[in-house]
Amino acid sequence: MQQNLLEEYTDFVDKVTSEASKSSDKMRERINYLNSKDIEMSRLLTAGIGLSGEVGEFNEIIKKIMFQGKTFEVASHEHMRRELGDIMWYVAQACLALKVDLADVINGNMEKLSKRFPQKQYDEKFDADRTTRDV
Image (cartoon, rainbow, N blue to C red; front, side, top):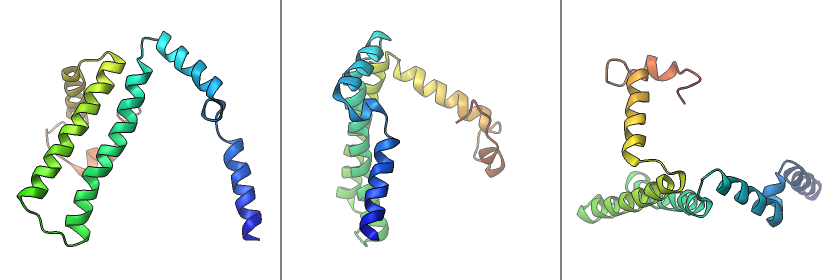
């Protein structure tokens, strides 16, 4: 029965996977399309995959000091700071890929959060009440 479930699930996964995810030719078509929209897909992929890895490394440090009893020392703090630098490098890559200014991204985030939190401080009520444009 377990083997049947695994085969059924594998078949399900295959059926709900996009063609661009399953076919290098279709993926190349999507890359060409996105490049034609003035998005540098090589940079964007570098940014997305790199961010995932670096955020994982940052979270690994947090996990060890929070849940595994590792002491928080100057070295831990420095390691986290270095990982944040790596994260920022990939954020800058994403900005280059999308041809957006990092300062504009920061300002846009501040504007979005200022609308969400009109008192300019966290409030659970406002955090739960989000509009379609505020995700």
